[in-house]
Structures are given as structure tokens and as C-alpha cells.
Amino acid sequence: MGKKIAKEVSIAVADAVAQCRVDVISAYPITPMTHIVEHLAELVNNGELDAEYIAVESEHAALSACIGASAAGARTFTSTAAQGLMFMYEMLYIASGFRLPIVMVIANRALSSPISIWNDHGDVMTMRDAGWIQTFAENGQEAVDLIYHAYKVAEKAFLPVAVNLDGFIVTHVVEPVELLDQEQVDKYLPPLRMKYKLDPKKPITIGAIGVPEIYTEARKAQDEALKASYKIVVQAWREFEKISGRRYNPIETYRMDDAEVALVLIGSLAETAMNAVDVLREKGKKVGLVRIRLWRPFPMQDFLKAIGKVKALCVFDRALSPGATGGPVGIEVRSALYQSNKRPKVLNIIGGLGGRDVTAEDFMELFDRTYSFLKARPRFSYEIYGVKE
Amino acid sequence: MPREQGMMSWKNLAPGMYILEPGNSVRFKTGDWRSHRPILDKEKCIKCAQCYLFCPEPAYEEDAEGYFICNLDYCKGCGICASICPKGAITMVLEEA
Image 1 (tube, rainbow over the protein chains, first blue to last red):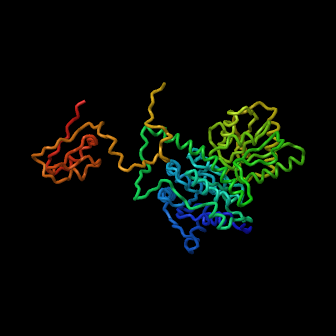
Image 2 (image 1 turned 90 degrees about the vertical axis):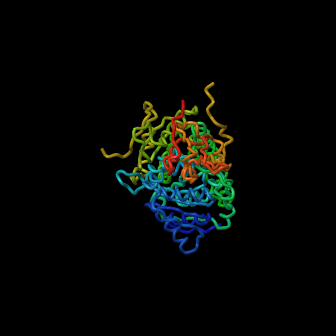
Image 3 (image 1 turned 180 degrees about the vertical axis):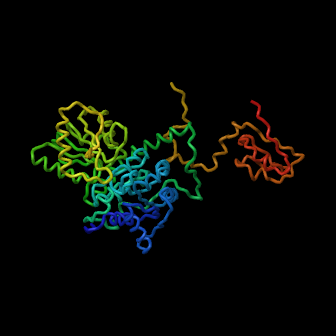
């Protein structure tokens, strides 16, 4: 087992990518993911990592290069954030449509405009429908572990995986992180074997036109592949637990056993929210926390099980979907509930936008409001939290 | 029952809708929506092969006498052959409905 070393999470993530023996890294540095690819470039330059680092002219080209390399059978890595992800957009759907096992780290950052380098989930929530497997880390250790996991899953499901880290809050923090030993990584992650790849000796066509007589079938096949990846995701975490002792689930719960009111969120804010839960539990309030680690494919059954018999949920979104019926997570949660017999009240809060601080006190207030919401008439909308009037 | 429009079951598609058989596009006849067809005047033709080289399909094939003949199964009627022919040996004529 590896040693715990204090490292900047970006550096630890890059080290984990290197341990996964990537063949091709193609990226266009952008805050707050810069340190990840800078460190990888350094490793390649120093001869510590035998990989091709392609310095491209844009994010569109970054993912395009990964698509080409991956189609030829290479293990690939890229990373981006915010505007970079937007610039990559066209290729996101092609990577998943081609069923390529590309791994990308998104250092989640707010979208322009107004221009912001700070953290929220506005960037990744726009690629909700891009057909990628999407996971969210809470802290540095999880970020590193999700890298190993991402390659394992991508190369079994033949789908691209986006690992999401909150920009700065996770990426730039120095944390004690335990990396796996190289032998463990090699055992967990055998060399990539593509069933079909671009090979002059055995020509195939990738990217043929989908006429109306076949497009629907191609999309159905893609949808089924993404849904079927759920089992691969879970299985890969089970295997990971055996070698690392660290257990991961699609949905994480905290003090949910007898909870009557629960907070639902994604990402690093869960650590702050746990503090709020602890304080309120001390006071005898039956509150809990549900954190979504696997966002796509959405683990609906795990989610419904996780919320138990709560009477009300406060869904905290870090992305705004202007003019919608809720934030992206709020919409997802309400839709999942409607397909079950559970009918807790749902208070959908949008907050922590563009790096706005959300404290344990904020969560305590939100729990209070969720309690008072129990007696209120149902509201099927959302509210932006902490706006100065 | 609504009209069955799918070409094949989604279960039989290769992952990513890859096409695993090289060169199978010859089986797809693409010439059925042509509005004009090329007519070759062999009197004028000098067998220079410009039509064969420039045809984007490529629909032209060389025959036993060395003439380049357009295969109308694939010709989309773009007229590049007629335009490029240095002898004006190819004329585009309207397809009858």
C-alpha cells in the first residue's frame, strides 16, 4: 500500500494519470486545471512518463486528438474547465458516440459571462446529455481514486469518463493523499485492448453517416451502453476497495438512517454540509446528507433507497438553468421521485455560484427552511440562495 | 402498427456504429436522386481519363476499349465530368421523370 503524502491535489491527480500509463495526453491549459497538465508535461519532458504530450491550439483540438489517438488504441487523457469545455463541445458527443474510452478531468468552474475563474458546476451540467460517464469527487483522495476508477470503467464500458473536481476547492488544496503502488495500478488496470480500432491491416469505418433509417438505432445502442455501464462502475469500485480499502458507492449517505429531512448535493460542499448535519444532530434534529457521486448514468434506484423515508429534501444545485423548473440536480431528483411512490417535498436551492462561499451556517439555515417547508404548500420551482436584494 | 423504419436492430449494430466491412459502400446505390445524367460522345472522346480522375464518387470505370464509362448506379449527376472534359465530349441531359 502506498504512503500518505501531502500533495497539491492537481499534482496527485496528474501522478495518478501517469501511474495509469497513458499513451497520449492532449490538452490546452486553462484555470483551474492548469497544474494537472503542467505536471504531466513535466513528467513527459523529464522522461518519467513514456507518453506523447500533444500541445494543441484549442480545446476542440485537444479532445479531437484524444479521439483520434483513442480510436487507434491509445490510452488517452485530457482535462479542461468552463470555457474550454464549451469550446470542446462538438467533440464531446463524438467521443461518446464513437464509444471511445477517453478520460477527462473537469476542474469545475463557472461559465462566462460574467467571466469567472471560480468554482461552480455550470460547466459540466451543460454536458449532462453528452453521453459520458460522469463522477464527482468530494476531496483529494477521492479525486485520485476516481482517476484509476475512470480508466477501469472507460475501458470496460467503452465510453468516455469525465471526473469532476471542484476548481480550486479540490484542485489547489494540499491534502494528505495516498496513491496506489505502481504494481497495484498495473494489476487493477491491465493494458488497453480495443476490440475494434483504426488499423490499416484491418480497416473499419468510424464516423459513418447515420441516415434516418439507422440514427435512432445508433442512439438507442448508445443509451443502452451508458445505462449498462452502471454495473461496470459499481464493480470497478468493488475491485478498487479490495486493493485500497477505500469504499465508494454511486450515492454517498451521511447520517441518513432515521433522517426526516435531507440535503442532496454534488461535490466538495458535502464536507461543509456534514458539519452542519453534525451540529443539528447534536440538537436532536433528524437530518442527513445524500451526495451524488455518480451523476451519469444516474443511479436512480440507489438514490431512491438512499433518501429512505425523508419527508423533505433540500436539493442544492451549483448550476443555474435559467427559466427551467429547477437546477439540473433538482430536475433530476424530482423526475426520479415521480417515477417512485415517494413524495417528499423538494426545496430546490441554487447556490455557490461562481465561487460564492457556502458555509455550514448556510446549510443549517437551509435545513431550518426545509423544516418549515414541511408545513408549506408544495412549490415546484427553485430559488437562488444568498442573493443580495 | 406504425411503419417500421429502422434499417436493422440496434442490437446488431457494432459499437459506435462502426462499419466493420471495408468497402461495403458499393452496395449502396447512390445514383437514384440524380436530376441530370452525363452522355458521352465517343466520337469526340480522346480517352484522357479526366472524367475518371475528377469524378468525386468515383462512378467512372474504364471499359475494354479504353473509354471511361459512367456507372449510373452511383452517378449523382454533379456534372464535374462534363465541365472538366477538354473536348466537350460529355453532355449533361435532364433525367426523365
